[in-house]
Amino acid sequence: MSDLRTKYPQIPELVFNALVRHREHTQTWTHGHFVTALLSNDLMEAFNRADADCLEAMPEIVRFVYNDLPAPSHGSAEKVAAWLSSARVPADTSNA
Image 1: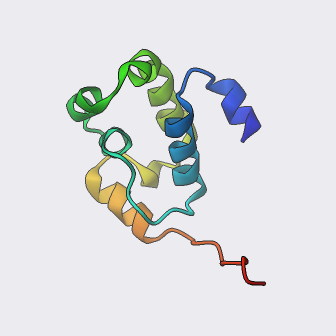
Image 2: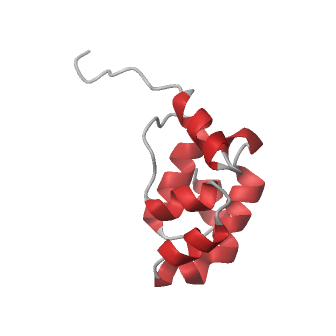
């Protein structure tokens, strides 16, 4: 993950972490409105939901999605929903 962080230093931490969890395919819940719109390829909604930091980092955020997320994980609301529903949830080892 540190290589990705070095590659995308402008992405706000919360958004970066959400994208990494999405990439790792271990998250079954939906993201916030901004990330969901971004992954669903809803540009107008993504810009509408973005805060000032995300607006400034938008070119870098889009590069992350385009270059470093698997193609089946983004591009439409249906693709995002299918990706999330098929995620590999790590086993709970807290009681082990």
